[in-house]
Image 1: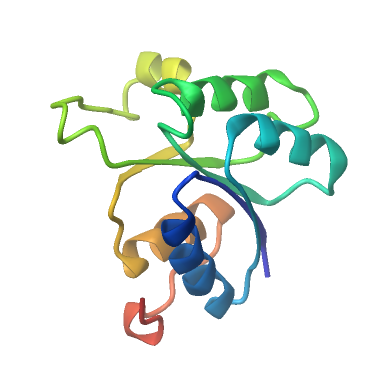
Image 2: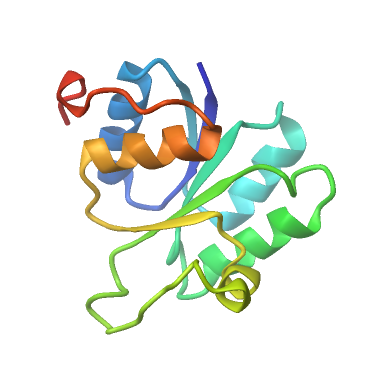
Length: 140
């Protein structure tokens, strides 16, 4: 079981992802702003993984959050999965294979919203170093 923090202002999206992740045996906490996410990290036991939306309360809040997490020696090793629904709509491409992109983005993996349950779980398992399970065992 992993402890996962979701930082996303879309309450409905958080509820769905929480259900998927909890059915997979994880404990999930959620906050809805980057500021609340950083405060949560200071007040609670550190999570095993953070899932953050690129555009939480403003365009760059997800990047700002990731930079703050990776700058802090206490939290810098926590893997971050960044999600967004804007990259295709704005023709923005993110390539985490490039060292310069990884350095700029500060996330360990990236996915488009909406994200299929199977894809989310595969990315979570990969970032946590766990073997992937059969996707059909996790309905959205």
